[in-house]
Length: 530
Image (cartoon, rainbow, N blue to C red; front, side, top):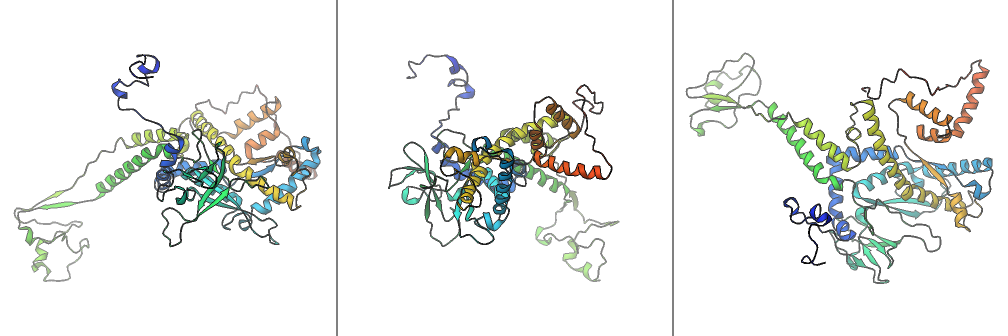
């Protein structure tokens, strides 16, 4: 509607959409398509996010905290097949699951078995993929196949490709330094290419373009691009994975985890560096000699021998011209200045009394921007018990969500591709795996066990877990998984063996009984200081 005919003073036109309020007059952003807003700026964001991770302690903490809490030492496969669909008994299902987990460990626990570069086991690939995803915005695991060996019966390997190497080929309209600025087209089929991601007319991703060199790599090797189709035509399995978090519809490239806080992180780093330099300057003891002597007769920076109260070894040194202008400090030293000379000491006074409050406020804002509470971001738990626990619980909501994304984008697809090869080679028996998608999905069922939330007061939370089990709010398996990431069935088997040994030794295991009406005087209140 033209401005001349648009009704005035309606709804948001007097609030956030106002063009006449003084505070909003210059605030006229124009958001473009996702590829314009994201792809055109991604090269800059990736470089800045990466250097902040290397140079800003707060950025390093944010990324590494996610790595530790989301993946930790690695997400462990726990096969969980749909035995009802497959028509298996509980015993047969458990036997199949144990065998499959053992086969997967054979492949995943050895660097040379699962990594195309031979540098990382699968748990380490998880850590590397998560770090690269957070720093660069996305990462691309590529499936490769090598000849089997007596030590490794599987051909599957994973090659992690960094975001910089996914770009539109120059022949198809891609740039050199800023590959996302010009969207290209595949001349063979007319598909559009968004910063190395080819999509068909319906918007479905069909292929990726990987360059053999990095944009700023110093090498004499010519740059060439390899087109990799997203899915195999015969198998339907993925040839390449794309780990990213979407924030816009029709978005095909990810954004660095640090993108929204690049400026405050940089400014905070500069401020802390200047405060540190000020403290260093204040620690220097500097003196200026004030004199009316001709400057040409004064040696530059001559302050004596450099040895405090050192004896003079040259008896004629005092008569030398340069020695007449030397000044030296030492314990118990009495120095006589010449006529018209005076000495002044530097005393830099840069106020730093508000440093802690300013930095803490900035850390809270940065943490809020990255969904990490201040306590977790700076690893400082000196508030009350309830506030520290609330911060941990809040952070774990984000870690749990990011773990779900990571499992769906990386761990589970890798497992399904590996399982397809294991079944095809006959190492794992799975009837109907290749004939019915529903049967395949039932065989591929799995959970991925990772680091648990931890506890500030294990006794309180253990009692709460027992009460939840007693009242049917949770199962033993749920509590076991949430508490330590273990397997309840295995725990029961182990406990049975241990109880037999205790009974043989004349001891007896007595389980703890929890009374829901019991008043625990040791709790000390919700705001007990920690």
